[in-house]
Image 1 (cartoon, rainbow, N blue to C red):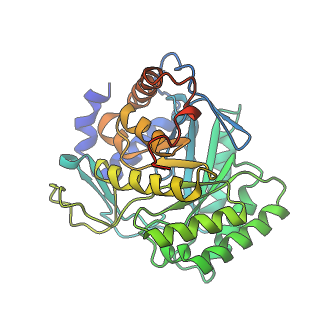
Image 2 (cartoon, rainbow, N blue to C red):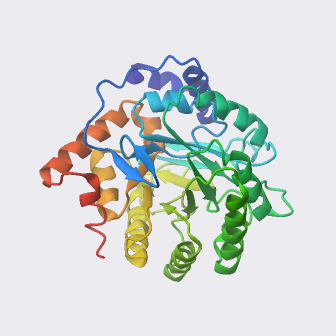
Length: 349
């Protein structure tokens, strides 16, 4: 079905094609993924993930289609990034397909409808407990106190989020990546932890980091995360780097690069993070996953869970089940009984 629809979707501007896709998903008419792949469950943070493959943040910014994506076979879905106030984001055009490179560049700038709309939508998505839905929180571009925006997000969604992600690594909001600096990062986590202690519930807290960090910068983040009780890291967001291998005419557009060209860089940072943390901090591997082999490589590099998004644009929703079947096959090939047995075996730790 996707093979028939793809030419029509690719004839549209990327952002319009995405909005059409969301509108279709909101109808609830999604194809059945078929029989679930057994033996890939993951127990982490007191949650039972039916499988390790999740939908990365950015696809469902306003929590309108999370239930539909879970029906497609994802083990979990991350909605957002959501900011306290609605914001339009950066001027269009702001999404660019790079088909020759199986990549995407975006400079969206946290466009979303704000906390109030997100909360209403998430309440509807969670009806009948469809599965694990995480909430990715961010700061408004014009905020006088960006850290307070994260605190407000944690308080607002503590009772309905299965887990939180603090997004301090998008390259499309000026100054946001400055929050990864050690002293600022410590202040951020301290204030968030105080808010979590005062909230009615305490979902796991993850931090999403950039792939462009220096080794000392990465080490500082890991140290602070371990000291302050962060539950995990998501490695990684999009990159501002432009590999020389890019062939598309859009390669020079500003914004974050995602998709296949990000795979090697993000996986190397994942390995470094696992080594630096000595496996004490659960990791979610993101960046360039387009096959079961890619997902399995992330797991062996140190990821307990993985996420994808860009590859869906090129391969469609059937990709999820293909990845799960291939991961299961690779796990059996290696003689492992469960995914936890192979996490980090290729990290060099």
